[in-house]
Image 1 (cartoon, rainbow, N blue to C red):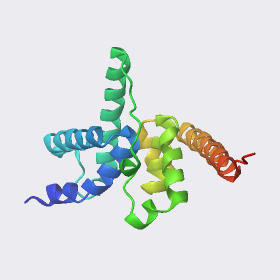
Image 2: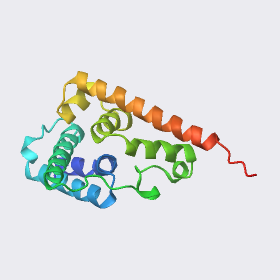
Image 3: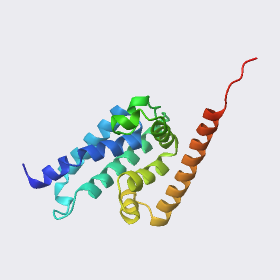
Image 4: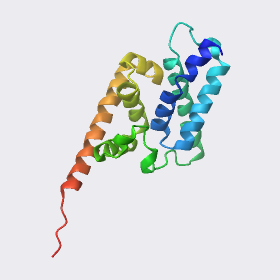
Length: 172
């Protein structure tokens, strides 16, 4: 197997995690990963051999996701499906059992897709702001704004859930 293809295959777990964060649906995420890999393999010559394929693959996936969202919005269908509890971002099983982790993942899925993509590329996937802005095809200032607003959304959602959890029902 070609070294470039092996490097691409090594990125599949990260691609799946990012696809799930974007699409919020396991089947759609798998389709998105497959489409990304097909496009990457078809355009293998566009990848600079000395570099990690990660940024290149994430850029391809993000553009495919945006294209899918545009198609869905033109057809007037719902773009996002609600997640079942076990379809959240891939995390170790110990964390899934943790209520706080579940609430954070649920809150992350509840924010706007462009804010979620910005937060996931930087906070979860570990790209720098410049790399994430390049992947998402937006200016760095826009990325920072989306991350800031996404964090505010997350705080508000998590504060609301904490308040609801602390309220006790008193029966007469």
